[in-house]
Figure 1 (cartoon, rainbow, N blue to C red):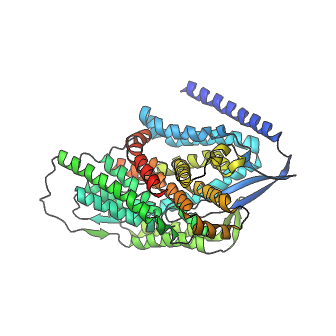
Figure 2: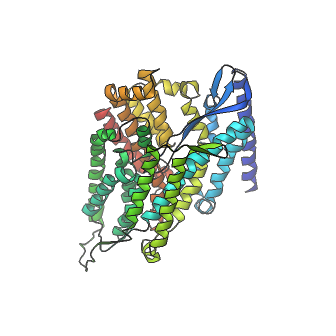
Figure 3: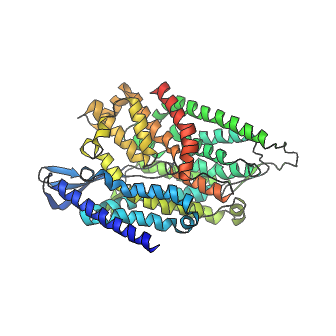
Length: 511
């Protein structure tokens, strides 16, 4: 263990020295930077799905203009982000006990590997970036997830529900339909426990949960701004609320293919298990804790409100936040607390409710949010950043679909969506005011925004970290006794096998 600590310390030292050397080399070719730091913030709120996300620029005030920090960072400043992804992928395979006991410490380690040299080199700008992502991105993100997780955990479907292929396919179809209207997180948290209970006597359950993640936790959220955060960002930037209904054919095709495949797989394993039709006494289905639906409505309404009103701004530790965002977060916390108070403990016990899934998400995504700062900053720098060759290569709708999707599989899909949304506006309408450019894009080149929107939502199903509910669904399933594939196992056994061929078909048909 001491050798591991020593090696990690050496790595941390050389990482900091390397970042410093790179910054010095780049500073030599940029205008002199003054001590005063000017911050331009473009605040973009989240949706009923998972999070209020703010994309931002920390800029230096220079004699000849403003230099985006993303323009200074080298590509290898993303190493800590890659490190935490590899930790999530490999530790559960090769050191499962260590990971179970120390995953929070591993996430904290990678966050520090990024934060320490970042602050050493960029000083106040780096501190601002870290505070910004914590206050405007991470805290709203975890508050929304906590409230949805808490409220949905108070709704219990009591009665006899037998997991036949038809019943399971119907539940997946219902969840897919609900996801666009109550968010993928809300729909996933509402249905995953009844889905698992209905199939508790089935032997082969892993594929069921993976298809649940595909459909309910991701693809189903593509029809409205309430379904997934990037679509809500588009709404805030002038895309009409119901414009995303144009993606209904894309949803019907993708969800239809997956539901058919799921039904055939479920039917095969159902027959293989030799399950006999249920002949016992059936208890009628009934909802307990049904009043939690009002709290779910309050959560969705609060998120929608935060994007429609403007009540000014306040500063928290030097970070500007809108008043409506703070009110929204307060309402979300209140909905969760009321749910805990009014829902009988017995209902949550019968629902096998525990805090472990949300704790795991809170710890791991804290590290993920911190370590992805350079990745998002470089991406936002566009052709002026280290990812310039990639940005310049994107020309066709299919390119936008795949690059938005590929990055959304690992990074936050909201800034990814906004980056390529802005790129498309600049491609066709450079110099026009954004409201005018958005209207012209929707009228003259709508397929580009369709590709960006579908990519940001659909590809979230590719990995456990592609969308927040993915991780929670996995944790809840494992708690309920369903074996789930590892991070890499999920990608190689399910994403690459089922989703990538499907996305190729979506590209050929629509883009």
